[in-house]
Image (cartoon, rainbow, N blue to C red; front, side, top):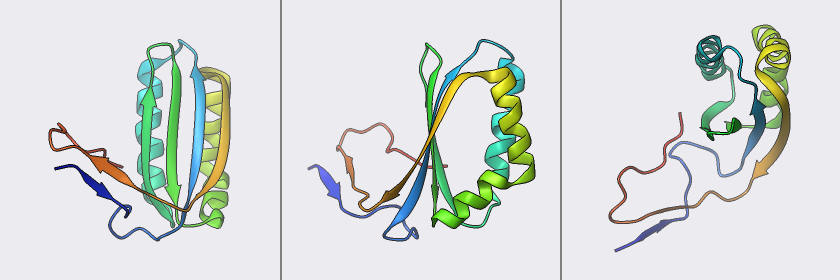
Length: 124
């Protein structure tokens, strides 16, 4: 039997915000980029209001990372966090041909998981 759940992640508010970061990666510094991405995630997880993160990267370098936050104020504080600001500058100089950031409010969070799913989606 298929399960359709009308609830989001356990413990998350009914409504929350998503910061959607879409990028075109350059071909430089993959090792450094991976270290930086790990550090950014660890740093974000310590920020008040951080709920989680999902990220994908295609073979052609297009990436989408969605971070989830309790409110817009938490996102604004994250945007201005000193180490994050430094990483943003490094990203513009070294790692991205372009990027786009969009902020959205999530009103509904619904998940479908088939009976034969290998692994349900997860948020870091």
